Image (cartoon, rainbow, N blue to C red; front, side, top):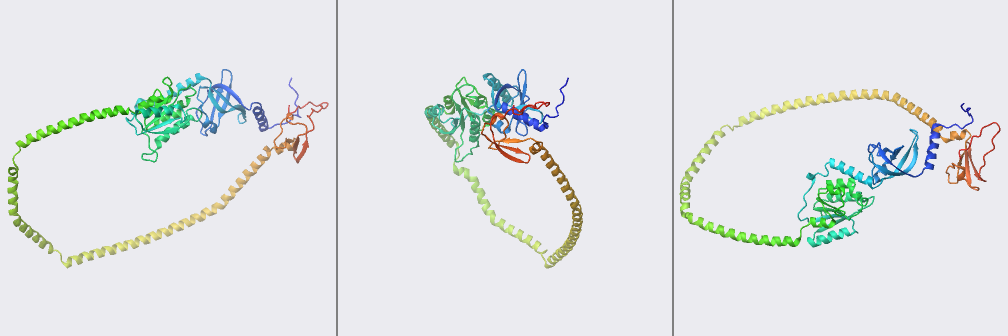
Length: 498
C-alpha cells in the first residue's frame, strides 16, 4: 500500500530543490582527489573551457576545467590518460547531474608519464617536427652564442669554462627555470625571444643556441618534454643544440633540436673548434700558399720572357695604322665642305613652307575646335544640374515616406519592449526569496549577514537576525533548539537543520 498524501509537507520549486542539493553536495565534498581515466575529451571548447569525464571499472563522473585553470595546468587532459584530478564537487541544475570542477591534474604514476611521453612523441613525429630535413647545420665559428639555462647551476659554469678553453666567444645567457610549473613556458619564451632579436640591434643576435640542463629523473626533466618547448625548438631559425641531462637521458627537445649533445660540456665542444688547432692549420696553409705564389710568379715570368721574344717590334705594328691616319687627314677638308652644302640645300627646301598664311589658317582651325568644346561643356553641365535636381526631389519624397513609417514602428517597438520588461519583472518577483518569506518562512542571518543553514552553527548567546516577510527582528540565541512536541493527530515534519 502507498503512503497517504501529506498536504502539510513544505512545497519546493525545482529551482529551490536544485539549489538545496547543490549546497548539500558542495558542503559535504568541498575538496576531493579523484583517480580515473579521461574519457570523452574532444579538446578545448569554443568558450575556452574543457568538458569530459573520469571513469573507472564501475563508475563515471563528469568533469569540467574552466578556461583560466586550463591555461595554468602543467599536464593537459588527453583521451585515455589515467590521471589524479583535484577539485570540488558540485551539481549542474540544468541537467540534474553532479560533476567535479578540476583545479589541478597530474598523471597517475611514472607509467602514465611514459605513456604520455610516447603518445606525444608519436603525435609530434607525425607532424614532421623531428624530420631530418628540418635540421640546420651548425655554424663553424659562431660570433655570439646564446645559452638558455639556470644562471645559478653548475651547467653554465661548465659551458663557459669549456668555451674559454677551446675558443672564447661572446656568450649571452637567458636565465630560466629548468624545473617546475613555469619552466616550460620560460624555456619556450627564451628560444622565441632569441629568434626575435633583430640583426644589428642593441643586443647582438646569437648565431647558435644551447638549451642546457643537468641530469635528473623523468619528472625533473619533464619541462623539456612539453609540447610548447618542442615546437619552439623546431621553429627556431637559429641552429639549436639540446644538452638536457646526461647521455642516457632523452627528452623530446633532443629530437626537435638540430643537434643533440650528450652533456652540456659536450654542447660547448660542438659549438666551437679548438683555437690552437686552427692557428696551427692557418700557419701551415699560409706557408704552403706563400710557396705556391712564389712558384707561380716565377713560372709567369718565364712565360712572359718567352712570349716577348716572339712578338714583332712596335714600329712594325704601328706602320699600317699610321698610313691610314695620314690618308684620312687629307680627305677631311673636302668632306666638311660637301656636308655644309648638303645641309644648306635641305634648309632652303623647308623654309619655303614656313609662310604666315599657313600659321593663320591653323590658328583659325584650333579656335573653332575650342568653341565647339565650350558648347559641349555647357550642355553637359546643364544636364548634370537637371539630373541632380531630380535626384534631390526623389530623395526628399523617400525621406518623407520613411518618416511617416517611423512613428508607428517606434511605437510598436516600445510596446513590445514594455511587455517584455513587465514579464521579466514578474518572473523576477516569482524567483525572489521574498515570495518564500511571504508564505510564512523566515531567513536567519548571523552578525556578518551570512545565512545560518544549521542549528549546530548557533551557539548560546550568539546575536542573530530573523527576516520575515514584513521586516527584520534581532534576537539572541538562548540555547540548543529542542524539537517541539508532536501535535496529536499530525505527523512530524522533521527539520531542515538535521
